Amino acid sequence: NDSSLAYSVGVTLDRFIKKKQDDFPFASGELSQLLRDIALATKIVNRETNRAGLANIGGAFGQTNVQGEEQQKLDVIANIRFTRALTKGGEVCAVVSEEDDEVIDLQNSSGKYVVAIDPLDGSSNIDVNISIGTIFSIYRRVTPVGSPIQLEDIMQPGSKQVAAGYVLYGSSTMLVYTTGCGVNGFTYEQSLGEFFLSHPEMKAPEDGKIFSVNEGASKTFSKGLNAYLDTCKSREYSARYIGSLVADFHRNLLKGGIYIYPETAKNPEGKLRLLYEANALAFIAEQAGAAATDGSQRILDIQPTSLHQRTPLYIGSKKMVEEAMSFVGKDN
Ligand code: AHG
Ligand code: MN
Ligand code: MN
Ligand code: MN
Image (cartoon, helix red, strand yellow):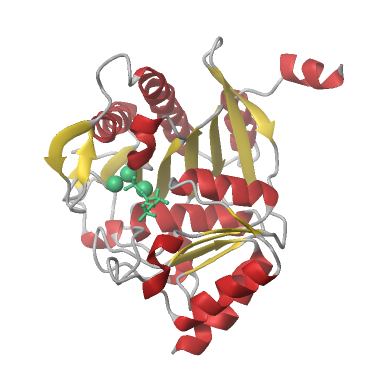
């Protein structure tokens, strides 16, 4: 049938990147190369994720990261794999990672790009075989190439991203990314070691009937947020919360829905990190016709002030985010 035909002559990620680059005659190919470097690391992390239980790389690493979280072995392994791929690739001058306290200066005087990355998202799900992910943001450095990296190269608002993406190590492994001209999804064919275009021009449904929030903390949610959640329940919306942001986000993007991680007693600024979780998904959301705010402003407009700063996150179908804002806005 034609779908298998399409599959057999499918567009690989490499061909897609090349075609997109041809659309930009002035493109130097460096961003294309950077995307390929990330895809390579993704294939390696995918293999290690699939073997975690067998290669004794599941479980805790035995150290705590700057977030105060107990690092999982795969957090550390994924961090090493992505940092090494970006170092070897030669396009990146600095990396901000959830798993490193400070900016990683790659000592690469010709690198034009800065990458912010959550090497493994949803670590609490690794050992129970539930989907986990990777999230990345790509910026162009603002100070002259070759000069020492400055804070302004790192502390850029999400609106300055040149590309962003996520990997979902789920029932299939997918890479979804944007360079500012729409969102495209690729599915990994293990036997060929290739990503094939499976979700061209992804668009989020404008409205939805799924809400994703950890209601275990609802005692400390704001009045407005609890009122919004009661409204969702009065309409008998579905509650779906995987505990892996990438998996919850991806489902909501395809089916319509909203993911909320608000301020809580335990996380008064919200739990998710601006630089390598919220910004990347907010860029993708907006490129797919969805929305992302911190409860009052666009995520992409937030001017970062510290590397690992957290932000409340309301992200998903435009109409759902707008309605949630109308409830939460009354809190102040
Ligand atoms: P990470 O594993 O990269 O630290 O991120 C975990 C995040 C996100 O993936 C998930 O949605 C959220 O933490 C779950 O937090 P709670 O367990 O507090 O609901
Ligand atoms: Mn973590
Ligand atoms: Mn994460
Ligand atoms: Mn993580």
